Amino acid sequence: MHISIGKVSNYLGVSISTLRRWDGMNLLNSSFRTAGGHRRYQLNVILEITGDKSPENNTAIGYAPVSGHKQKKDLLKQMRSIKNYSRKNNFSIGKVYFDFASGLNDNRLNFLRLLKSIPVIRPKAVVITYSDRLARFGVNVIKMFCEVFSCKLITIFQKDDSNLETELAEGVIAVITSYAGRFHRRRRGTLV
Image (cartoon, rainbow, N blue to C red):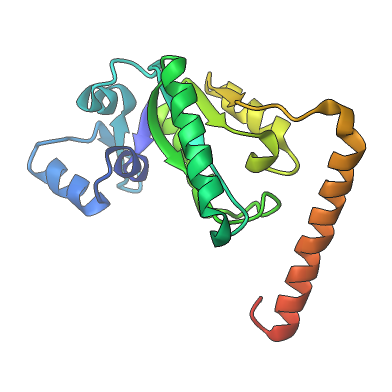
């Protein structure tokens, strides 16, 4: 499987210009170039460099979002839970992404980075504390996306199913609150 220079940059944690320089110095050569001149790298070569022997490694990625900056204690608690769960289940924890944004916001920076990293890193699992922390709606779609890359979406804690009405009411309130906030920001001129 071949991946783009941008994905290699994210995976290795170096800039694209550094990768171009390494290619010119024959330190890390691209496999080939596309018709447009874009470099492509073999995934298994990149995995060997990082010490991963194959795409089927035992890495887990975590995601710990909170609604706002006032919830830093909750963020730290989520991160600890994800790391502890990963250790107990023999996963090597790769990275724990976090965002300060609502689960209704589908444009969260680190949430998108998490999704983009799954095809590149090929983790064995994505670990979250509660499913509604990942997204208020569409968790099954995210779960199916993970499964395409042989990755399990693991939820550490389950909410009590007996309070379905409460959960639905909270979802409706969250949607109304989100749209009310957007409406008021638009009136103030801070939202385009």
